Structures are given as structure tokens and as C-alpha cells.
Image 1 (cartoon, rainbow, N blue to C red):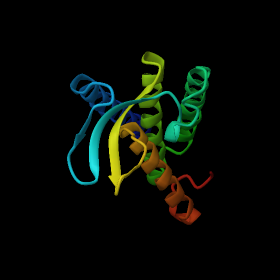
Image 2 (cartoon, helix red, strand yellow):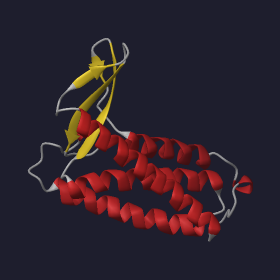
Image 3 (cartoon, one colour):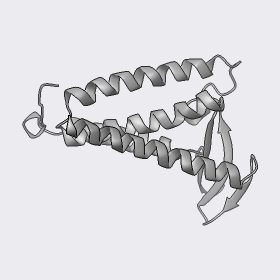
Length: 161
């Protein structure tokens, strides 16, 4: 049980940091404002009504409930997996990051109707779609899940996956 609490604490930390940074950007920028910091990085306030890479952002509005539903299902599934494998550090680290990121973005969708994005990386005029800390946590978590899948079962705690 103690290990499980640590994973949820990590997920909560991700949510808090995500929401604090989104609040700071929203309070400091007007929509669409961009501030350059390096030759490849800007901060920009933008809103995403869609999923990753603004997928379905232009849909008629049904996507909000759809994405909230998917995120809530993911929260339940991740919670079950965390409970079953609380001792498997890499697997649970990945899940906790994904959980925190999913909750950070679903909070935006529920309260605002869109996700606040603000990190803008670019190279020679080509901009990667803006994203936020929740998106970063989800991405790192997904990479860790892939890395974990390559580990031999004998090195995993709770090898009954």
C-alpha cells in the first residue's frame, strides 16, 4: 500500500506542476502571444480543443466529452495496473507519469473546454505543435513503458503481467 501511495503522489505532483505552469502562462500571456527565448524555443499561449497534434480540434464540439471519457477510462485502467504492480518501479513510474499527465489535461478539458499549451519548439521555421508539461509527462511515461517492455521478465517485480 505504501508503494502505491508513492505512485499516486508522483502523479499528483505532475498534475500540480502542470496546472501551476498553465496558470502562470495564462495569467502572463494573451491568447496567441509568443515570446522567443532561444533560436529554437518560444513560450506561446494556445488552446487545444483536440487531442495530440490538435487531432479533431476542428470538430463540432463532441470531442470534449469523448476525450474526457477516454481520459477517465485511462485513469481507471492505470489505477488498476498500479495496484497490481506497485512494486515494479519502472512500470509504475511510467504509469504514474501518464496518470498525472492525463489528469492534468482532463482538468483543463472539464474546466475550460480546451487544453492550455505553451511550449513551442521550432527549427528553421518549422514548429512542433505546442504542448505542455502534462503532454511531456505522458510522452516520457510512454517511452518508459516501451523501455520496460524490453526488460526480461525476471528483472521485473511482480512478473505476473
